[in-house]
Length: 599
Image 1: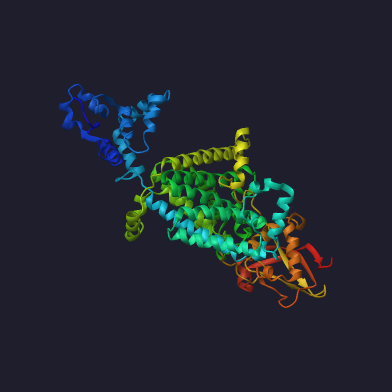
Image 2: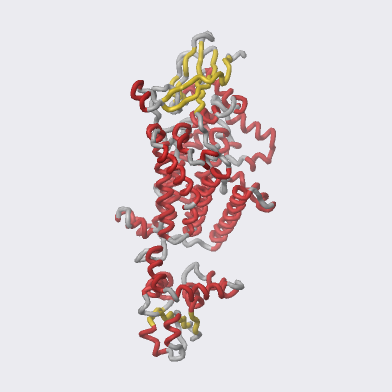
């Protein structure tokens, strides 16, 4: 019998067979006909009943018969994007034998396999779609970009403006004089065209405007391209004030978001690859560093007190029982080192990974001000779900809108080739970086590729708090008119006044406050920007003093400034109840001696 359409014959009494045939039907549509052998076996007397009971049978349009794993892969070859499995079966040595062995193993345990399928994929499993996931992720990226551009925009004049701490024009001049034309690639940014204060503000607020366009789903691809270009420019222009983990995570996520807008499913997998590397590396560096606080599970006994900008809840977290803090440290390592591997498992195990990572990020967000870092990580968790899962928790009006207006993107050949090329580059470079961090080695080709694309920051290494700080040094800056009587400058967010409660500031990042935390861990000579900051205070630069919470010299600049070093710790519950103080500080000495403009 010659058929014009392929037919798959399965066991109609087998729950496992019915489950996956329904899934295949949704994949292949009307390109394949499906029938239980109980109804059509008489039409194929050449196939024994025992063969029908043992394995599925595929009858091709030419009448040829295949069974078992080959039959299953022939069916999948009629589904968009699934034909590569049949190619592997027919051309990769050993693949067919392994596939048939696995098929026979599963077929011999159909009841258990059916229960496992229900547990891993759910009762009404359908081919996953990501229209809703992609739409929500891109809107979230727009909001995060908006927070990032606005946050830097309101500080840019004081940080890198012509009267700021580290003027951009001087930085660009240094690049040109030291690197020549090579500097355009090592520091790719639009500011080579113009380094004026107007240009800096234009980039920041153009980025904010493009972010709103992305949120509104207007010209999303064009917006994503320019958002990446502009933020990469700010990343380099910001110098020491822009070198944070969330800045490079935003650059990498933003580039992958652009690929997602061009090809949905490749973009989803690349974003999962990013989340896997980010979480795994965050955990791995903690153990590979040899830091004893992670090894003995005491890290969180210090973390809430020593983190850069704690929230009010961090004080309470610090005073939790030690058993809870140790258990939380262990949980952090399990989430960062174990759950990332579930990202590549079936959907319900991916959900476990998503909920675990989300829980960790919520706790970090509630106890620490990390700008948009936690929000971006939580947005990345979206790609671990599919549309069917999100439809269960989102308003029907939203899901209906997306269903009516958004469709899975089917890129053309040129775009598919470009996305595929970038995907290979990103996966390869990510593997190279994993090998370098985890194994301590890197191949010559991998090092060459990594070096060539490093300036673009489309693939990065990650890992915060590899070594936990166990004390909290704080720099207190003072000014004086006579060198005898000193008045303290106040910062907006970092600890200073021991009576002031820690403040909330996410998703905004006060970048001067953050750099003060890092500066306190070293010396002023190791942080050249700090000396420039002191000079600006002597000049009473309004752009720089606007970054502060309190300027004790509002009308004329001080004659002298100096920096003292203090050791800060949280007050105990008893001390807080008695004095109302959130902190207790002890003098540690001089961080930077008194200077004047003439010194």
